[in-house]
Image (cartoon, rainbow, N blue to C red):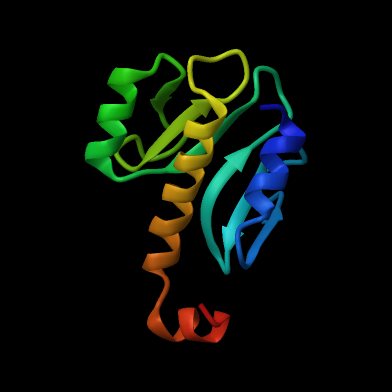
Length: 117
């Protein structure tokens, strides 16, 4: 999976926007104001994704390409190498979905209703 494919998949999720709050390289993907993914075009391509803490530990033990979240809360975030990695594209997409779902569910009921999902 290259950066463009990753970007397209992240932006295909409902109500997702992105910005560059840290610098001109790190792209942050949000649902409303909440972050669910961070990435940049550096090589190899990786993405920080929110993850259930127990599942995060399991994933780190199964894949060399998944480590504790770089510059993030290590309990709740993983860094997933999506290029030149043992993590296949389907797994990357599942982990993006998982991150999105965790953050979406953390939105208030009013915000979720406003979004219409």
